[in-house]
Image 1 (cartoon, rainbow, N blue to C red):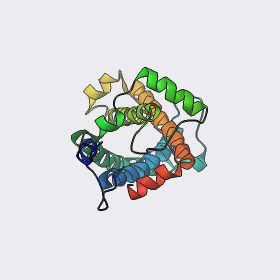
Image 2 (image 1 turned 45 degrees about the horizontal axis):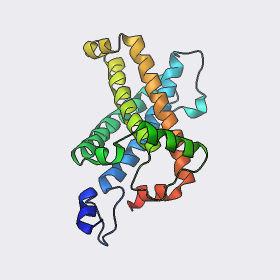
Image 3 (image 1 turned 120 degrees about the vertical axis):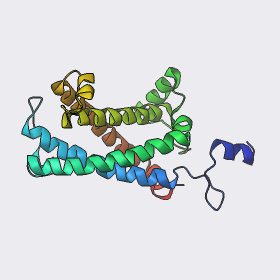
Length: 211
């Protein structure tokens, strides 16, 4: 591959001509999203405990806010950060075509092969600039879960003013279940994501340095 072709595939490089895996805007929005999402999850668990949907509660040690009012304040504060930062991340990903380059295409054959390799501990991570099929599915899925969590959260927050949005989910109670399941999917992703970062520390370093 010629240098010109390489730049066409990924035009972002540092001063030494080395490919930048994660541009600065991606790194900053990634870490802001991480803090905002963890804040929303832990405060959301406290809100859930005030009126459980299912027959279980989250341990108080894992919740944020101390009580319902405190948890709601943390939840709403993080909500605005997450929405603003998330829009910046999504806008950059779409306009720069980063999402297209990183997350597409996904084939059933590639997914089965990479999932099999991952379960056997044989999944290669030599080129951090390219996502395997499992990563593409997970990253694409968590973006969709995040969008669904925000929309269902808005439907719960303003069920009268946003009654059309609430009706899209069926009703208030259904929107609350969708919100809980979306946040649960994001939580599961975070656990897998952190585990993989610890297994492949170079990927964590790249999210700090970009290279």
